[in-house]
Amino acid sequence: MATFLYRLAGKPEVTPPRNEPFGDVEKGDAGYRAIIWAQREGIVRGYGDGTFRPAQKVTREEAAVMLYRYAGSPAYPSPTKPPYPDVEPGARNATEIAWLKARGIATTWEDGTFRPTVALTRASAASFLYRTDAVQHVAFREG
Image (tube, rainbow, N blue to C red; front, side, top):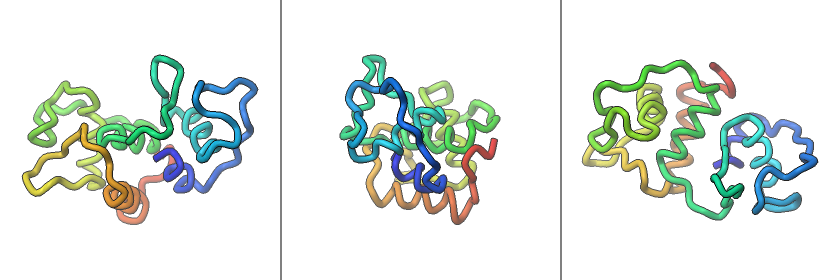
């Protein structure tokens, strides 16, 4: 996902850091520049143990958070009603998921759910990115 967003942002120049921000990402690794860029821009933060876990699957809610941050974490109210039947107000990342829905970026499963903890498929990632860029024209750091 970091690589997709890095490319969507136009592959900005990245100067390697003096100290690596993640213990499991090194210069020369696949996606290195994208991960460093996304970390510097606040799009990704990694885990409390200092890792990024680049081979771990991204969930749908994590993708929502990354897209929200990509857009500059725009002001958006916390939902008072469930944006989806399986995303309650006050749930972790409910605001980001509600923003994704309001912007028309995310669609639902046939039963109307979002399924936040399900791994993001390549097809869903492509759809999210297409709607972010070509349909909704969400720009990097739009605010």
